[in-house]
Image (tube, rainbow, N blue to C red; front, top):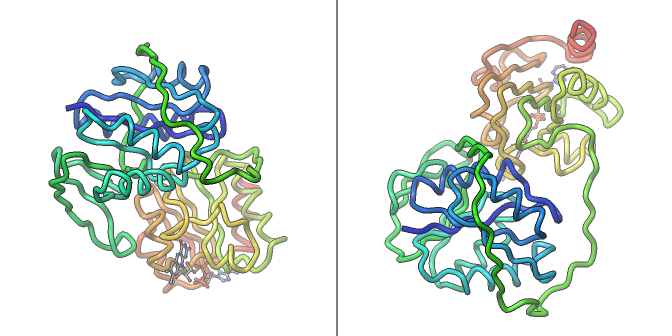
Length: 306
Ligand code: FAD
């Protein structure tokens, strides 16, 4: 069986970590071709991933800005001969693959965390409270994969790169603006350490306490939805069912109660630390280390001690 993986792009650059995790998953299914919608440099980076048989590079400007319309049509044209088409379950992949599934008239199988065999996949449902096993009899299966469930494929290989073309710009949509937030901190979904703040922080200015601790640890910053809705932290920091899914080595939840929708985004973290003044807060049920304390005292002390 041959499997086509759509590489994750961040602008013109390959998002190596997310792509490498998708390649690991795809290797369980067959020989892996990797589609890169981007320039030569991104294709060359992709070619270094171990386990990739060939890189297909679509360098046309129509595919450079993540247009779901254009890229789904490109993928549909390339689909013949593949048993599976996969992509990371990110904003990029989630935007494109459902449209591809629609074009191919097959069902999308989203958020896969385990591949049992070529037809059978496991995925979380009910905010991560249950795992659903899905068996698909489609001749071609279209899947998105949760990166937190797969280790990244190593680099060091040198796969051939082949140029591919599709229908180009379909004229169905036009990018207006790409506003990317610049941050010195690590990217949330691939960070080894995440420090997250919740409603307990109380204000946007006090969120700096969480930022100071994150910087001491070289960590990414996260937030609960309540913190985001209250305007303490920007939207792209939200962790949870309707935010980002993270599984770092260390997750520190500060002033977060531990609602199931938040746990859905972080409970696979290897070590969970919670700081909360309410000893009955549900977050302590999933925490490996819990500190019942006022965050305004404990967090500065912890930051100083570090
Ligand atoms: P709260 O539940 O209000 O908890 C605040 C905590 O701070 C409390 O435990 C309190 O004891 C503690 N605290 C207060 N002051 C201090 C102090 N001085 N020192 C120490 N501790 C203190 N939520 C998400 O996070 N992510 C999601 O993706 C998400 N998606 C959702 C999707 C749906 C469909 C729905 C219905 C809800 C979703 N939610 C999500 C919301 C979720 O249900 C909770 O409302 C939210 O997670 C609560 O955030 P919180 O823990 O910051 O706030």
